[in-house]
Amino acid sequence: MIFDDIVIADLQALGLSALGSRVYVMLLRRGNWVTGYEIAKDLGVARANVYDALRSLVHARFAQQRTIHGGVQYAAVSFALVANSQIRNLAERIERLKQTLPRGIDHPNTWQGSGWPAFRDQVDAALKNASKTVRIGTSVTPIREIQGVLSNVSDPLISVVYGCWEGCPSTGCGVCRPPVTALKPWTQDSACIVIVDDHIGVGSWGSTTEPIILATDYPAVVSGWRTLLGIEL
Image 1 (spheres, helix red, strand yellow):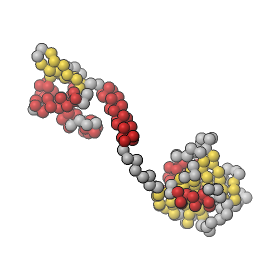
Image 2: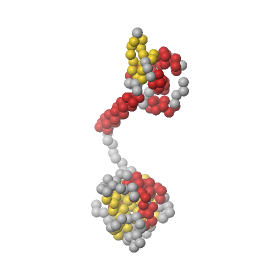
Image 3: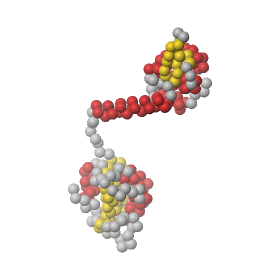
Image 4: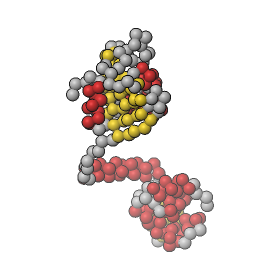
């Protein structure tokens, strides 16, 4: 009898043994009440092992049993019912753990890399967490690199505010939406800082082809970046 390895592996991930997984699949294929002897014969496995697997399936509520004419028969519980039970039990278990496990210490996250693809990815990840504000201080080059990412901010309740260290050239950059605040330059390099909800920051600076990228929610760094954007603490 051929069994799908992925199906067996997924059933094992739900707590069944390898043999228990095969027995459960066989019960589903049978679709009616059968004896352990019949399942053992179909699988070519010793009856003692099959009966152990069947008892485990009944205990885990993947199968049910009945006694008829002095013998015991088994049938599969539909996987739809099994799945609903598994989901409910997992949700309850996770909630219990959330309530009882020590909360530990929240450590700030910091990621460092380089290049425009990395900058776009980090800005995109930060924007997905936005709920109130997106504050941007930028030069012309980097803001153009994340133009497509910024267009994903479609929630009208999220305020997007722009500032420019190049004084917003008369021709504009084609990305920032007015009013654009003129910011006091802090570097001669091309740079951009994006701050989401005043606690997540993504910055780029240096080379216009391979800039340094830093993404962080470390309070001291984000606080310093907010100052560069002229945001009052």
